Image (cartoon, rainbow, N blue to C red; front, top):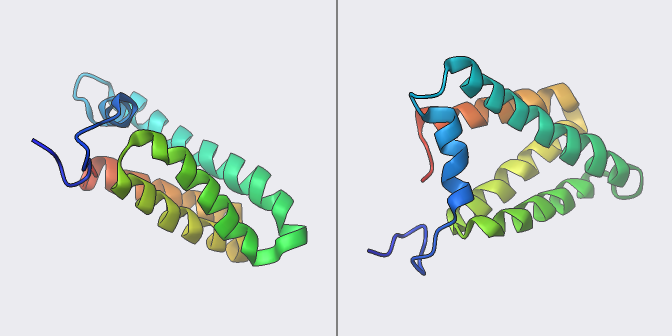
Length: 124
């Protein structure tokens, strides 16, 4: 069966591996929480704290869509168009949040997003 999210019937094993780390009942809760926090903190530290911070003096707010595009392109490897689109939109919002509110706000928003998409309403 060909899925709507995988129109060519091709899937990526890396896409399901993060779900298994977070939502598998075999993994202790502290592992699941650690993966969520590490994902949020790691992404925000690199994409906002490194890339966007370096683009900000030259491009201002326009650094946010540039960084969102880079992140979305990296997610093409999942072979999931929904994941790529969601990555671009959320990354753009985190970039704008970072620009106006700082790294702590973008980290908090990212952590809440991860809880929603990995635990409450997974995108698979």
